Length: 290
Image (tube, rainbow, N blue to C red; front, side, top):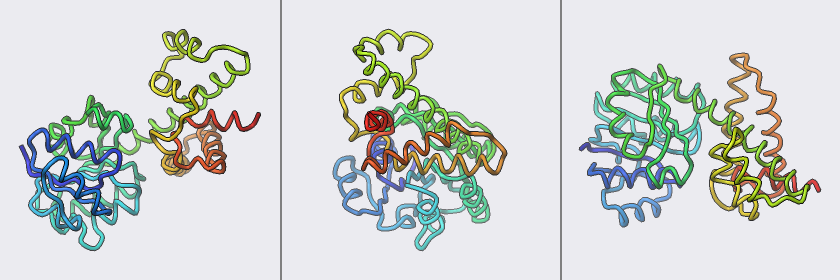
């Protein structure tokens, strides 16, 4: 059991930190909105810090799951950042989906401060976080990963080191690129079924058992057919992630034509007022074109 800090109590971080506390770790949490941290402590026990630095004081390992590059910089090296409160030899594990550039910067800053740093973005959505069924893709020094793995395993169904620092974030980009195409394909299939006068549930029951089956199909088709979008991973966040993918592709020369197209489709969803809708709302866009 370890003394831990967890920074960021959003829809993912809140249950992840809860699993750590339930597993017997001593967890101190920080959240920008204090009321959320107070609610977490009331529900799970543990303690809370007024700043990232306060939460990180004395922690052997600090986990973060915040919003974007700027948020990560703030909790790491901003005023009262966690790095200032961490003792030499402590380890920072970042579960945020961020750019490879900020990961490189934070890895270097951690090393300069005598700290370890593992980039460990996650996949599995809110349900995966709540049910401790996340897929965690990691980059960083092997020794740091070995220390982090048994702690991360508390809320993961699979955790792997992909390579050196930044490899985790690059793998998460692969994940988001694949999802973009899958959700668009599923949306078009369901839209086509509706236009053809077919029962969407019966169609999915059949095709999901063949080569077309996917996590998105199994977990999203019912809410899509029921016109329910107020759940899951928000379009605004997906566009943030796809921007990272497309910017990185510009740097490494990868060609992402479908990803670029789907990103623009998500822009259309935002114009429909769906910035906080689940990413499966690409079907809603197709319906709006009728």
